[in-house]
Length: 198
Image 1 (cartoon, one colour):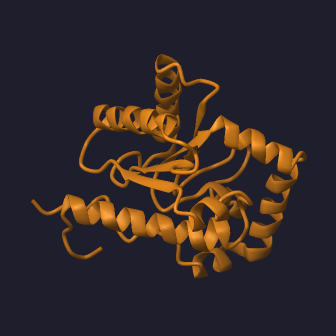
Image 2: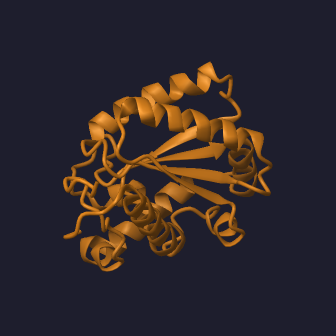
């Protein structure tokens, strides 16, 4: 964006961009058959860690994991923790997932919650960076998706051949192509290289 944004504006922009990506790509292309219901019911919680570093992110991740575990799924089904100004490098973000897993263990939440990664430069192992199928996990900003294990179990019951979802997503993205993906307009509106206003 061309104008300096306050931290609050960065957070609002990051949430709006992520919600647009969810509606147009994840739900619009049916990349996740389980996303529409909690979105419609308002059970997706959005959190933003902006203007901090790794320590601040870990602290917020801890708080969000505990909050999700403490609430009923009917109130909060899942959480998207958006990090608009850290981890421009996908490999750095991937490394941070080790810290997230360690935190799950320290909180005794393994088997209760899971952390799934989304990133603007997400790249599946064995693919080229420009492979359109990587877009299935490409969000506007680095994002940690906090998921209930119970929700995954229910999803597997509903879709016992879950690998078919992945295969269908690959086919959808190949058919859409780079131009079709670009036309969805699901990129970031906040430039993390531009410091927020003070």
